[in-house]
Image (cartoon, rainbow, N blue to C red):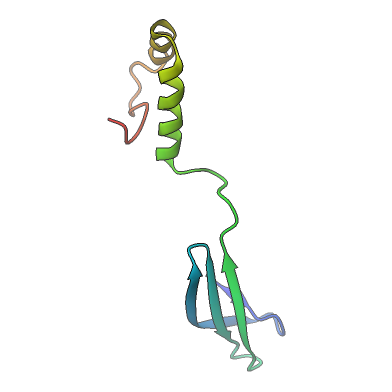
Length: 90
């Protein structure tokens, strides 16, 4: 991770960090260019794509709600695929 100094816009060095919560970290930086010391907070915002295992679980839930015939039709579209349809659920 690269932090730019808020004062001179040069790259500042991360000298320490501390996890506050699972989604929040306090980061301490020093700028060699201007001599400032700063405290930043890095926080988790949201996923732009959930992990593959979440997709697989969601797919299984949808498939389980289908009738046997509809499930066969859906799965037939993926026959012969090189990768497993639902990774991590074998």
